[in-house]
Image (cartoon, rainbow, N blue to C red; front, side):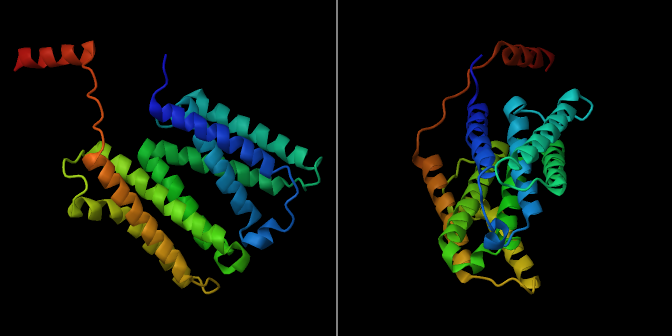
Length: 261
């Protein structure tokens, strides 16, 4: 059975992300938390949350988590075992095993599965991306490190662009628009990205130890606008997706509806 496009992208993302995460947790990274200003436990929650998010969707890309079935519980058990092995192995390569890191891994696992319990694929993807953008902006200090300025700008630009593109994909599926690329469409597509930017900046304002960098705002706005402009052009003037063939089941339902009307 051929894999659909969504499933292929998820498998590709998991195949790239997991090895990178494994390598990053098993090579010496001295003073990483001091360099980024982010708590080690927060890093573990985010890292394992994304890992479990991708792992669940790699096996079940079209269904929410159903806790009445065995699969979510088996996934939690597998992550606990993998996290414990990961911490043990770190002790063999010069890193320090930490039980609290394992608990943070479990916290990230449960959080990801709860998101997938409450939300369908596209809203869940937006939630994960929004959490990552918020955490990098407000739970780290990379924007205050001159040596990491390039990384901060890249994270900001890519994060808001991806968040906006996810929203556009979701909006086009929920309510396909024939007026893609118009000003009103563009304003609607920029809305969630701008709201996320406002929330991120608002938290920074109330955090006394957090300084705001104007270049972050410019990078975020530029990425949101760029994502909307490019998407609008593709949807308006790009090739139209082929019509899906009518299945026998669909034809049967339509014929029954016609017969009863």
